[in-house]
Length: 217
Image (cartoon, rainbow, N blue to C red; front, side, top):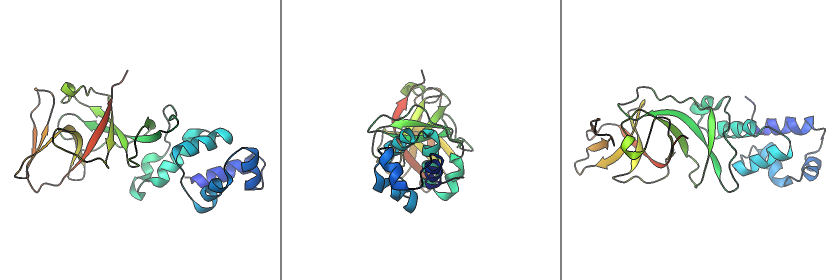
């Protein structure tokens, strides 16, 4: 898979430029940052990548996909192969990957991490990502199947927050978080037809806050 630097270098050469500075001047691109990206492997912000795509007449999804692949932990980079974009982020916003489906019901045995899209977000959490709701246990919270849920790992979690919870290494669910004084965690559904999930103290559990719910049109 090509790196961001290689993609830009190849495009600049295809446009007939032998000097980076000449290309930057002709295409109205800040030279020093472009040099850092190509020579030093710097990964710029999404709005800069969208500028490069516009000025160099490139497909923005190619540049964004390459950058997200490089930012991802090594063992997750394969998830970003062939990524596509949703509508481009507005100025001042960023794009976060859609990483798959998360159960709104019983524990999901294998997280469906097959990203094929990005969606625009506001906020400063560089690790933010989306999951797609699956199941009906959270209907009372207006989380319908297919809803896009923004997960912000950098946000603190408190009782009453809707979270993406992970038990062990493979299982995920979306529930309301309640921690009890004795260390027991209750993952409460928002549909009375479903029972709460009780996680005893000492069980491996991680939770990440869901900061936004986007209902499909």
